[in-house]
Image (cartoon, rainbow, N blue to C red):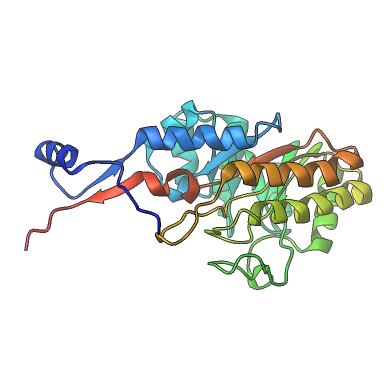
Length: 291
């Protein structure tokens, strides 16, 4: 059983609470920076790689600034998250906007800030055009349907999920967007949350890479990036083995070289939207028992 050691000592805590009234959240900046660097190292084989931190995981401006300094982008799902990310310095393609049941004003702000929009539903194409316009770069979220056997955690049955476009809709959407002047396409999928297995991300990558090759062949679309989203978890329990991000990055690289490179798609950028993996071990709630 692994021993879990907090990032702060009792003496340090006593000094902190003498200065700041409890309850407070305390974050480990060194730990956050170390993990951000490790993620970037794990995917450094891909020259366009970017980790878009899932802002919803910890919408804290100070932390967002740290991640921005470490070369991360921001993954936003709401109007407020877009405003916050812009305010702390993330600009244009450093922000991905993925949202469902999206209000018109959210899409309008996303277009005003010129961020990369990831469409969650095929009906969003017409809606986006109606309330704003269709940009030259756009992404679509793919729902592969069925059961996802490798991960039995929080969202393990994408077939029942409300997120994303079905496989036939992906082809239809790309064709429709090409006709509306889109030049650069992205692909995205979210299948599982908090997986504690090094196999999840490479397996997800294989699914997306194969579909990307098919879409290029079926539609002629230039797929510029593939966003593997989140899902890499952390070991909450002492008996769980932690994910090895370097092994995960290597697994994705193998899938990339087996599937995308032979198809002439060796220029595709890989994106991630890790939230929990980036921050969960580096935050603590500090409180005193008063009764």
